[in-house]
Length: 414
Image 1: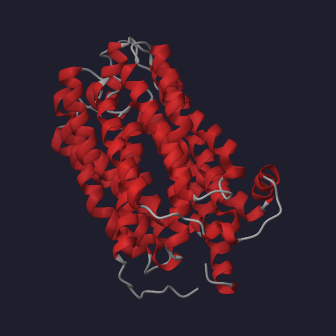
Image 2: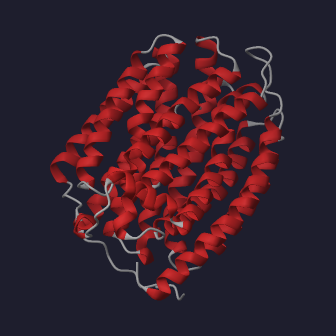
């Protein structure tokens, strides 16, 4: 398959869609990501063990996964804008509940509610992108939309850490809910209905539609590839701040610098990788990025006491690998489903992503041990070695996805 390197300018409305989906992703990712930097504060404030905090992180992921599976059959039956509005409203309410939680049990309940709604938003956004942008320019769009990940670290996480250190860990969640409320108004007033998939006639009811999607062999290959990527991605994240504070001896009030610099690098890297992935073979880019990430993960998880500036450099180098494999893999995955199955595919894919991530976070909580509140984390490097093995498997699975997509594009343009 020959890569289409022609760069077509986006219309003003397409630019708005990219912006609104990016800021939507920013708020959802920030809600999830903020658990990691607040981890050390929350574990100390609520007197949590590593296994309990791992469960608090995975509660969101498990509920998000279940929600995605339950809604998959309906995902192609409605206007995607309406679905986005419904789930985003629920996400806001769940985030407010997180800010009001004052015990471990209420926190778990709040994270479950937030996950039930927030976990579906990513799949709806990807379906909208796949509906409005063709495969040859989808990498560029993914690069901008997934900048929400980097922006959450540059702006959201440092601000959240600062606020949490002065007014408590609850307040950042209220801040996220306030921002999301503004975004909700913008989606309501400016985003046009996304209904092209409704023209594809299907006599399947929602349950048969779900089964049809799951039964498709090519789709299952994509699901497995996504699950492996998620397992590797979620393992290190829950205890990132605790490792930095207790093992690397980064002061709590300096954590925001670490996250801000890592996030800033993402804002630069992701658009570049997005454009690059539209010009070269996406699988080759993914493979190179995965190998780079594996090396940096092993190095980073084996660090001991390290100066802040050096930790920042290692984080940026590791982030380069992580971000550089997310974009090409996402672009390839969105090319797998047919238009009539796209919403269901994205919902199931997102569900498996969340469930796999939840299993990884809970598993990490069992592997990593902290004997006292201020003791170094033990066996964090074990997670690094496990991630390397999973990355090798994910390269093989993304290769299979790439072959299917190339065959499909040779037969018919996506």
